[in-house]
Amino acid sequence: MNGGSGTRPALGCVGGPRLLAGLDAAERLDRAGHLDVHGALPRYPSEELVALAEGIALGGRGGAGFPFARKLRAVIRSARGQEGRSAVVVNGTEGEPSCLKDAALLLYVPHLVLDGALVAAAALGAEDVVVGVTRPDVERSLTEAVAERGPAGRRVRVVRLPERFVTGEGSALVNGLDGGPAVPSGHRTRTSERGLGGLPTLLSNAETYAQLAVAARLGVSEYGTAGLPGEPGTTLLTVAGTTVVEVPLGTSLEYVLDLCGTVPGQGVLIGGFHGRWLDPGAAREALISRKSLAAYDAVLGAGAVLPLPEDTCPAGEVARVARWLARESAGQCGPCVRGLPSLADAVERLVTGGGGAALDAVQARMRGVRGRGACSHPDGTSSFVASALAVFPDEFRDHALGSGCGRRVLGALPLPEDESPERLVVDWTLCKGHGLCVDLLPDVVRLDEDGYPARGVMPVPGPLRPKALRAVRRCPALALRIQE
Image (cartoon, rainbow, N blue to C red):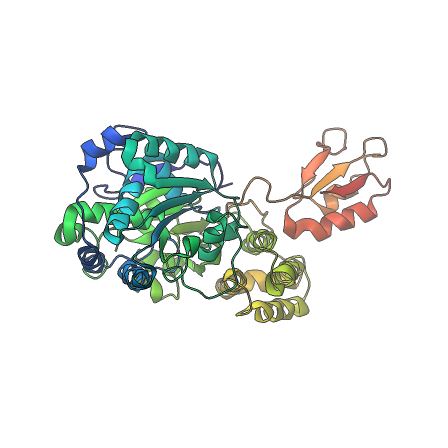
């Protein structure tokens, strides 16, 4: 299974749609269709917009869930020292391969996101409204939407940035939009104080602005008719890396999975690759709400919900994601550049029978990166591995001791197509059909009816790299090699 760039999500809904309204009759809402479904956008003075955001308890929908009203107040306060100047930035990058919800909004209902950004810009008197994206199809959709607005769209700028996991980090996004490298700054400066072009900047993700646009039309009372008393409204989830579902807050997680044709399986990863694992029992009890998930030390984060099927190897799945996360380093601090690849190596050694020492090495590598990065990537990666060790202890112990679980790594956790750049290559001029390679690598190599490898080039998942190297060394005819 693969998610991320280029994937066009399927859509679903529990109850009446708000963000996804109108898509039952049209594949994409242009400007006219958008106004027909949602109506005209009211104007809000700054204090009234703050009151609206407070009244609906709007938190950011891109990761940490920071209260949007506090961001607004901080920008208003900082702008006073800048002669009232400020900027608005929409984070539409979504570098998490298990997340498609912001892409769905920007592809299918882009005007709702633009409405939220523009109502905020009008309240702040902001000069610039900039949307950062990484996907070419999202860039095209937004460019069309801006053009559909005529003169009113001229204040909106769409900027395409490199598609990387860390591009969506706040300072990395601002650096990229300002023409620099899209990497985290390493400084703890708040964008509300100094962001785009050095101005106080209101920065949030696409869904947050879309929710603001819905609330601006409905008002506090009507907005609260969906969801929970303390957590009103709906939210978007990406389930299994393929389906975007709008659900009222408070909906059962198990019901959402059932709606998408799946079950908790061996467990569910909530919040994406910097998220937390829930065991099957917790997944059946949890609700889609901050309070419910907090009881399991989990957060919705960017809204990714990833059930792990019964027929895949949990330890192997975690190892391949850990390797991918290590490759997504910004390359500017030691805990990322050296620490995360070392952590991925340790996890792979554990999975391939490294013994008790391998378990100890994983713990040591996690301690070595925590709290030491220029951004939260090392912390998030180590937390992902730690959560997996806590939820699947028997799996990791069995793998470390050499017995394993007997299941293949199916790639149930979505990664980009090029997640595994290394390949096992057969030199047909040397291959004699000994078949030793299939004994060492049954998950990679298949033999044809004549006893030779069925394919000449075979992708090697990260966790199986040590076995692939062993197959290369032990091939009697020296007919195998690893190719980048």
